[in-house]
Amino acid sequence: MHTLELNEPASKSKIFADMIQQSTDAMIYTTPDFTINFVNRTAEEMFGWTLPEIKGKPISIFHENDMTWEQKKEMFSNLYSGKAHEVEGISKRKDGSTFYCQIKISPLFTEKSRIYGYLGIIRDITEEKQNEDSLIKEIDLLTGLIGTARVIVAVLDRQGKIVYYNPHMEKLSGYELKEVKGENWFSRFIPGIEKEKIKSAFKKAIAGHPTEGNINPIVTKEGNEVIVEWYDTALKDDNGEVTGLLAIGNDITQRVEAEEKLKTIYENMPGGILMIGHDYIIKDVNYRTCEITGYKREELVGQLCDIVCPKGSASKKCPIWEEGEEGFRGMDTTIKCKNGRKKPILKNAQEITINGDKYILELFQDISERKNAEENAIEAKKAAEQANRSKSEFLANMSHELRTPLNSVIGFSDILSKEVRGELNDPQKKYVSNIAKSGNHLLSLINDILDLSKVEAGKMELEYSSFDLHEVLDEISILTKPLTSKKSIDLQMDLPPEDIRVYADRKKFKQIMYNLLSNASKFTPDKGTITIIANQEKDELKVAVSDTGIGIPEADRATIFEPFQQVKSSKSSEHKGTGLGLSLVRELVEMHGGQVGLKSEVGKGSTFTFTIPDKPTTN
Ligand code: ADP
Image (cartoon, rainbow, N blue to C red; front, side, top):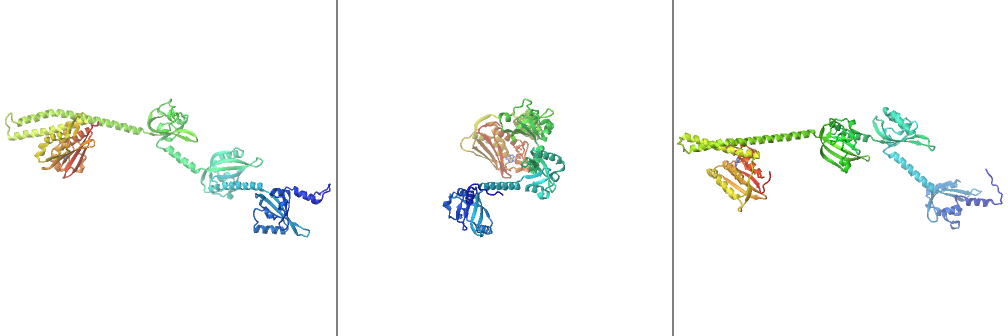
């Protein structure tokens, strides 16, 4: 203890007054009713008031807020029992601004132990308070982050003992921290086969080499493995000594599973996949690519893509790299296989970006089988067409050869029936007439066959001319008169009054009409009606031949236009015919670029229609 030694004559009160004025703490002396009696210089500076301005004013002029009843009670109980009362609060300056301060109020006693006043010592703690606030915020933030983060945060000591881990690790592992605190991390969480590898990573991190992206599993309480990606850093104390390890881990089990699923799909895709880098080097292939090309994966990966490119070694000219094309789809090309053969493939290619690097992704299908099937089908079609042409040519030739002798059969039977060379008796007449009838029937059959095969063999040509419809129909009605009048059939025409010009092969047009009209009269009972209706519609002529005949069952409507097809009903088969008339009608109409149609009701009649376009089409 030092005693105050006075060299200069100065009173103790002067010394104390000086000490008070020089103090860096603000001091306020109040009377027992808290009226300000004295403030030192620091207090004047702190609050912005001068002593004369505030002497005699209540201490409350320094208060930002009134004290609560509780606070007052606590303060007086301290002061009356002779203790100093310490409090932190907000004070107000003369200019109204505020600051944080720490106040220590001490009661001052007379010798007779009566309170004669109070001494307040005030310290501005605004800065400390701000630091503290931000620290508190930081701590709150950190604990909040670590507590709620969906990452593992674990702290191990230098030996690998568990010091801390966060709630996320508790949830993942199934172990609460308190259950395993102090245990060895590796024995608790790391599966046997991984232990050595992970221990050496731990040692590296402890030695000050942070490790990033190590992937290893931990075993949970339930015995499952969770795959975690780790980021490890050594923890150091203020002297730089390593005290332990901070490990941050990400549960990537789902990501790994998804990657494995994708990998399985990738490998088992029905098509091949090639990934090619900007340097034209193959970076990856799937299993199917190996199957298609016959190469092993390691024989392809790392090679120039020329190895499979049909263009060969000068190929480095991919339009995606060289011309900036985005990709192409459905390219019909080939792939070079290990055995040197080229297989036909259908290829899509596209530029993709992985981790900032650009690649070409090629997806392709082996279409060898499809190509073979296509080629076979084309061959088969060619062969069938050839066979059909040969048949038609054969029939055309045969028919021609048959007609000559047949004409002499008919001609000589005609001469015989005219009895120019002598009379015939009745049975002879009957036989000759039979020969003539059969000969004529055979001739019309051969004529139809000849026409039809000419069409099919592509040897029939149309001779277009422009003619008047009324005129041609009049000619036809005269031609069919013997057929209609024999059965008293009424042939009517329903035509527009004005002239209609038709541009077609006149002879063939008449043949179409004749075939339809002769069918109509064949299959219409006596006293029936046949109507020819013709209209010019848009850019074609539409002609209909309607009858009140026996009609055609629905089942036969599609087939009667085929050669030799006839309706099999008893009524229909009473009529002799070749089954070629309608086929010829259809062929001739289609040669003109028109279409045939049929509507019919059994027992009521049929309507055959056909169209002839105004302008000939190349069909
Ligand atoms: P064909 O008359 O020589 O037998 P088509 O090819 O001209 O040969 O006719 C095929 C079949 O269609 C006929 O046998 C007949 O059964 C049926 N048919 C054709 N036209 C008519 C019609 N107007 N009314 C009823 N049936 C018809």
